[in-house]
Every structure is written in structure tokens, then in C-alpha cells.
Amino acid sequence: MTSRRQPGQRAGLTRQVVLVGAHELLVSGGLDAITVRGLARHLGVAPNAIYSHVADRGALLDDLLDDLLGEITEPDPDEVEPDAGLITIMDSTYRVLTAHATSVPAYLAQQGARGDNAMRLGKSMEGLLAMAGLTGADAREARRVLIIYTIGAAAFATAEPVTQRDGPRISRDEAHRNFVRGLKWLITGIVANNV
Amino acid sequence: MTSRRQPGQRAGLTRQVVLVGAHELLVSGGLDAITVRGLARHLGVAPNAIYSHVADRGALLDDLLDDLLGEITEPDPDEVEPDAGLITIMDSTYRVLTAHATSVPAYLAQQGARGDNAMRLGKSMEGLLAMAGLTGADAREARRVLIIYTIGAAAFATAEPVTQRDGPRISRDEAHRNFVRGLKWLITGIVANNV
DNA sequence: ACCTGAACACCGTTCAAGT
DNA sequence: ACCTGAACACCGTTCAAGT
Figure (cartoon, rainbow over the protein chains, first blue to last red):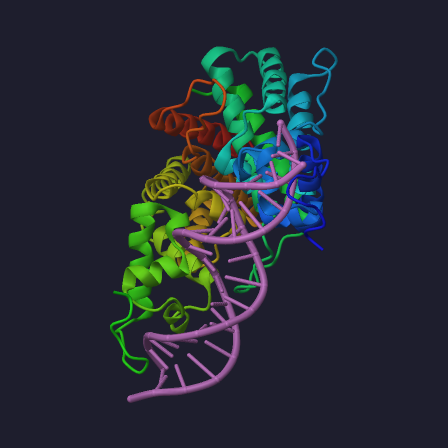
């Protein structure tokens, strides 16, 4: 069933088609389900056909995850208090990252993000931080701290429910409320701007 | 060179020996270098010999990483201000996690930690938070937030220096200072305790 | 109980074709 | 330019032995 095509025939693949296929695997099986061979199987092509449209697995994941960041909603920076705006944007990030299956945030934490959407969100945060009185190095540090905390929280929230040991497993809702509360603590500290 | 032993002969393997071998691979090649087959090669045994001492790769990593947490220094809870004590313990955690190669913190963020040392550190944090006036649910949430932030920061600090795009790569020192500053912000907010 | 041999079902990636 | 075939060098894990 894998090979109905002869070597010379086109399969109609595109970078777009490859990314959509990868997204389908993400939704159905999580990040680990996105393998080059599995994706090729999903698209009905030979494993190495993928490499005609994407440099390697890493580039594929980076592009896919930046697309995900496109789903994050930005508040209009002119109509909102800076604190509320930061909470909105970070909470939206948290929701998007936790919605799309396990290990996405952990991958981001390890890899960082430098795609178009990541840049856009960075600019948006910068604007809100400026309204809160933070500029230059202060703003860059605050932004980095907020991103680290948000992605870290998303990673913990999507952590496998460890069977090991006892421990009262935290619910998804509790994890989210815990995240928001910590976010508020963090923003309080940033605005207080002690040292 | 792999098989100098007959099926019935012992190789002198122990759970300890296996863990030490895994630690050597961690130091020399990072977390990804710890593969069951690679470890077996390193120890001069057949790949499946590992399974006589460890349930699977996951259990191996969990045990190894909890051993790492054993290196974290705890402040004496009786001799220190709670803020300073929390900074000491989280900073020590950050240093230990970033010292031992790439992707260790990301793995922890994804997996959580429930080993003996993780529990010990949790208790220690609880004591410090109690001194700061946090108990019950408040303390649990504060503890979780501090852990998330610290492991997240360690994950970002050990992220591969992405060649992609421009961006002024942050130095290891800058990342560390940024972490400490954010940690202070966070503790400020926690102590201020605004809902 | 501890280990090996052999196998199963996978990976990512490359290289030489074919149209 | 886009795709296949075939190969290389890996994975984690299991099952049936052997002592």
C-alpha cells in the first residue's frame, strides 16, 4: 500500500501538505508521533520523500510549532492595562501550548522559538512592558522570565500523570489556576521592580 | 569486542554499576547519549543485559536524575531568612541542572520528579515558605511555581545555541543573572501575596 | 539470577537512480 | 524538481535459551 507510484511520478506533496500532515499527527498522537517515517506513511509516500520539502525533522518541528504560536491571541495594546494585557497574552500562550498534546512545551523550552510568530509575540510583550514602565535591558529580562515561566508551566501541566509513588495528582484546572496565580505574583514583582 | 562472554557467565553488573555508567554517558554526551544500547556498549555487555537491573529506559533516567538532585545544597532552615533560603535552594537547583548537559531540565519539566531527593527538597522548600507565612494550599502553589520557574529557566539556559535567525545569543552568565532576577521578582510577589 | 543470541518493529538520513 | 529503492547506522524491548 505504500508504493503505488513509480520512481518518476509526483505525489502532489508541498511544504504546506507536509506541515498539515505533521499537524494531524500532532493532534492525534502528540509530538513524539511526528516521525519522518510515520509522516511519510501518513501521506502515502516513501520515507525520504519528506526531505524534498523540509530540511530535516528539526526544521519540520520548528515550523510546525511556530504555526501553533499563530493561534495565540494578542490583546490590543491600546485598549488594555499592561498587567491585564500581559496576563491575557501569557494565558493564551499557556492554553495553546497545553491544548496541543504532550511534550510540545518541553520541546519549546529546550529549543526556544525564533519563528515569525514568536517574534510577533515578543514585540507585543515589549509594548505591554513599556506601558508598565520597563524598557531596554529590564524589558528584555522581564520578557524572558515571563516566557520561561509560561512555557515551563505548560510543560509541567502536560507532564505524563506519573504512576510512580503516591502524590495527589493535580487536575488540569488546578494546574491552570496555579499557573495564573504564579503569573500574577511574577507580574507583581516585575512591576514593583525591586533591584 | 562486545562478546567475550558465554551466555551463562556473569559480567559483574549491578544497579549501581549501571547507574554510574549512565552518569558517565550523561557527562560526556548529554541525556540523549544515554541509550540502552549505548550504555550496554559502554559497559561491555549485550544490550538486553541492562534489563536485568532496570525496568526500562524511563526508570533508568528517573533514578539517574534523582541522584543528580542529591547534589543540590539545602540551607539550614534555622539560620536563614526565608527569602534568602529560597534563593539559595532554587539557585543551587538551577546550577546543578545546567551543569549536567543539555536537555536534562527539559526532561524534568516534562516528566516531573518524585524520587527521594525531590521529596527532600520539597520539604525543605515547604519549611522556608512556612517561615515566609505561607501554609497549606498557598505553600503548595508557591512551591510548584518556584519549581516550574527554576526548571524552565534551566531548560532555556541549556537550549542549543540556535543558529537560526539573528538574535543576540545570551551568554551563560547573562542567563544566570536573568534567572536570579526573575526569581527575586517571583519571591517578591509571593511574599506580597496578592491573591 | 544474570547474561547472551536472535529477533521484532521501529528510527533519521543519504545516495543513486528514474521521469 | 520530485519521488522511489535500497541501504546505513542506529533505536527500545522481548523471548528463548544457557550456566
